[in-house]
Image (cartoon, rainbow, N blue to C red; front, side, top):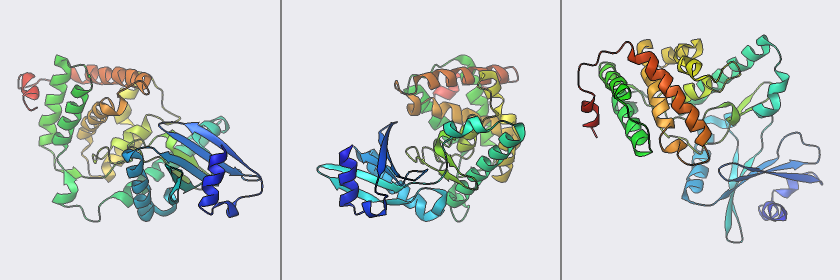
Length: 316
């Protein structure tokens, strides 16, 4: 990976590095290069190739969020060119990803403490991206957002059943009776894998899906479903709406407790739309479908739709 050395040298960043260094490549949605100094226990730099307009927009979002959030997120150093290629460079952060840390979490007390810190990191993130004032322009109609998610779900091969249509119809009806809710740009994938955990600080990374929705609670459900205390059994996942931290988040945002389940329905439909289409997330998509079915099975028993389920489809 000699080209990384050439890139950092051209960017005049090598002077901050130790004499010896190592480079690790991680393949996610695009290659990510972690550059370590000789005695460094965390990356000095994180280098990502900008292959398209989406990558360029992600870099712009990184800079924007850093201005708002400071050290809650990595510091972007700039976009640099090498030959005909462009690369985004961030300063590395202290801490460990969850897959390195989980073996050290051996007691219930330790797990509860780290989960508490993760929820606080989410609250801190929401606070910095929340519009300065909550008014008509910075709020949204939840039933409209739900129908958008349902449309995306349909357009990406989602299975339509009479039970699903009945649940959606009920959700739209109940959402229509609730006040507008705050419009908060969501991280898009606020999960364990996108948190770097240090002794006294958590850094939020990866804004590839930032602003996938402004529907509050989306990030809260993403986090809840990946926590150490979570069992990935689909029926258990469908009960995530009853978790105390989820209810507390809804309360902080002014969302009625009986509307939380419909926010979760929105979360599932949006995750089962274009976000999980394709081979990369096929296994996760299969699991999400099972969670959705469990959710429908639990809710359909209490539904008594007042309109034909075909009325929902007529809105598209």
